View: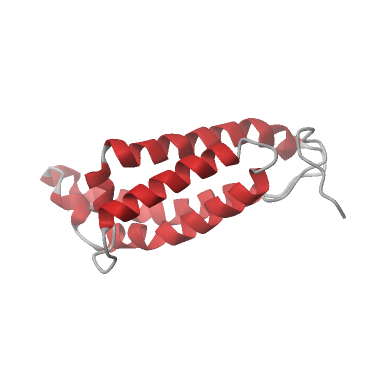
Length: 148
């Protein structure tokens, strides 16, 4: 996402930051509400799926809060980019296995499979959204100035 000359994107940057932060906090909390659902999508070659689910849940909560705070916004946004790249193999695993179709009725298998594949390009959108907050904009009055 680039900041356009007339400031249209900049106007949306602040409210979308709150949406993003709350989204990640909520997603992180869900890792602790239904941990087994998340553990199922951890690729089988990775050890201790429940520990990885807890770790990624904590990271989402901390980074989601961090992106809301001026002092930690940019570092947290970079953390979200790294986290999204780190969990991408789980999304590939879901798309390339039959795990999505095993738990749905036969009639929903096709849509479930399509949703799993649609998640892959969505991950790129989420990465770009987080990356947008790694860059300050002058119009954002609560950005902490950086020393030269």
